[in-house]
Image (cartoon, rainbow, N blue to C red; front, side):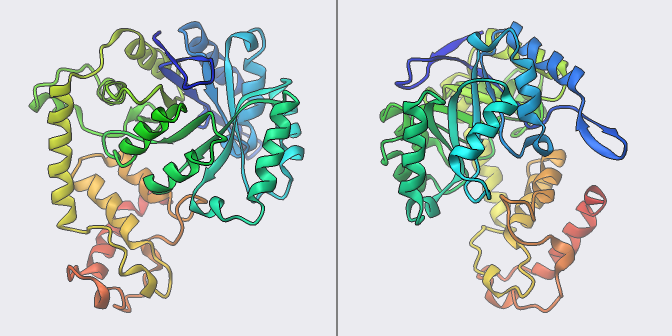
Length: 374
């Protein structure tokens, strides 16, 4: 396993991190629960292969992830860095929730405690300074070692959050499909933050380019996961790629890539970027994501997100990724409604600068994705 200096934290972090949001689940008495035996075996295998950073959160696996991670840490705690998150808006206060999470993790401290999914709203939040004071107090008392944040907003907002000068690291989206945060990652590194990226390999699968496309570009890979990770590792501003894995086979494959495979060359990265830019050009023929239509939908159908999922499916050929992208609509991260909420009123089409037949395309999307969401 390769390791990187993690910003100015004094920590050396493994290039591959374990994302504990997709632990294997089973059903017991009609309820979904984590299969602890399989999950702990996976986590231990990752540790054995050199992974020393594990990331969880209050909500993951229906609130069970932190408990299972805590059990898996037995015998490994002094060799592993633990990341979890405080969800602002939770009914419990910062300190109260942190203490509950410490009990769930069965540890006396969290190494990297994130403000979960903050964005521009955090900068002007009426309780922002209170949250920061609570975090600094917890750090002084040794309950957390580093203050961090995870992020799903625009890149320029990420830079403004970094300029608050309280964070040791940032966790954000970055992969072949979504390179929007490249400049923000470079800025984070220039300011001494450690950088972790989520979504390089979606659930062990590629979140990017089909293997066949890579081979047409002259890039030889054994799997889609290899291509996705090698692309991320080619970015010198990325310290760790966080992968949400759900089988031991995925753990072993991703760890082998992180340990043994060289990053893509600048030439290969340029070839992929050119191919992805061409795909984006084709996708923009269907929808540019301008969002001009959204304020006029009486049912708050998230039209641009739906069309983005459709583009992943028909332009990029990423069928599973597209379905997951579509199914995220209505979650805490993706607002609005799916295509089945469309009233066929036509208000959206009156405000589309590209004159897209939105209602017709929404019906196509509904047909394509309906079975997946049942």
